[in-house]
Image (tube, rainbow, N blue to C red; front, side, top):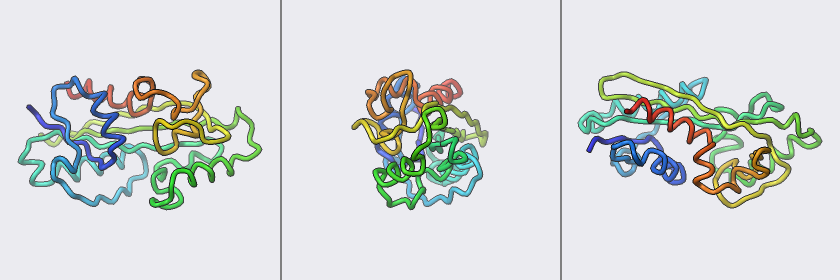
Length: 199
């Protein structure tokens, strides 16, 4: 079976990825499962650039070339319109990588104090890059629109999910089931778009 390596160490992300790409006919491995350790500096200026930097860095490794594997990498984040699209590509590093998301979420809510609903618009963005063994690269981008809530709510999801309110569902993305979230999420949409490229 052909191998597909997803350049992440995030177990929550791997769960989503496996669910969505389950039927694409590849053995899906995380970097850890593929025995790869790499520290990649993501210094791109956009989600797409960061995803491409990660995918090509892993694809260039001799052990990956030997596997003849396709490498997928994503870069995703939260853009809040009122805050000039912050935290954006710095979402994971916002207030420091080791800062808990409870603290990050509280800070963003605090920064939006007094801002009315209609100005709390935000989106989750996900760009995925696929590096193929022949050296070609494909990228896709998808988004999920919503707004920033007034408090954390919901136990599902991770990161900024508990403050990301979806008006049409009347709840945050952390209150959706995994199946519901995968249908509408930025990563779900981007993975389905890249799945078409893999076929």
